[in-house]
Image (cartoon, chains in turn red, cyan):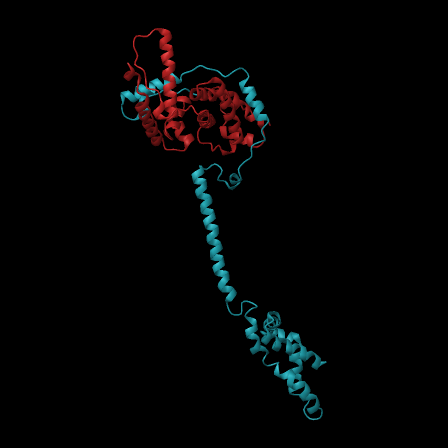
Length: 190
Length: 191
């Protein structure tokens, strides 16, 4: 029996069932569909393309191995994003350059900038934010990362984590409050 | 994956500083970066080297799609129920085992009363009757004793089988002496 797995209307659960029934080809369109998104999630967390590619591959292989644990809550892509986020933070911890809240560099004051300098400062600021998010305690880190680095909507985060929507909203808000306490805001830097 | 632009309403109430931080996070995360060429093929090659994933054993129980916490609760409930059933069953079996007449262990105590009648008769009558009754008294006592001693079917009708089995089965010195003594001494005497 051939199934059009590339058809986006195909139910994720049907795809998972097919994989569990031994149809390896059923996983292929999922990889082709989600590889870029998974890679970008990892890149936003890790900041290094080579690491991001390694971890994205690990995450996709891990998803294949543990696909039996997919419960069908939310999209398969969101489930993959959660795996990728966890794997990326695990790699970050192994790299031992994950900054804790105290070691996040203090934001520099901005003056009149030339374009190259502005680009450099933007990159620095992006690093500050990345380190700040990485240093957040769980579950705030996961919620902020899934929202901003994996581009998931709040209801998707709620479904994939099994938490109530209002809990996710609270976690996002508190996570941003904690992040603001550490890295400040752009306005404060001006 | 669908792009979901950050919406200040996601934070609940209106906090300009948090909204600005959310906007900034979103801008810093915006990227058009692509993995290197052939990335998906490398991933698929790595997956081809993996064994086919298997369903979890609890999927067969119909709880595979449950959240882990709920699944744990269901499995715990099943385990508790199984233990409770074992305890209740043990509670029922224990008293039943000690109930009078329900088990072989109790029968030896009943045996003496049941076999009390045959025991004295074989020991006394065989030596007593042959010499004493050749001429006068052939009928009354002897047939009763012969039937009771030789015909197991007659003994089987009453409560004797259980007591007989129990008597020989239990092997207690006092009871087996009477139970088996009746059978062994009867058959030689009858024949």
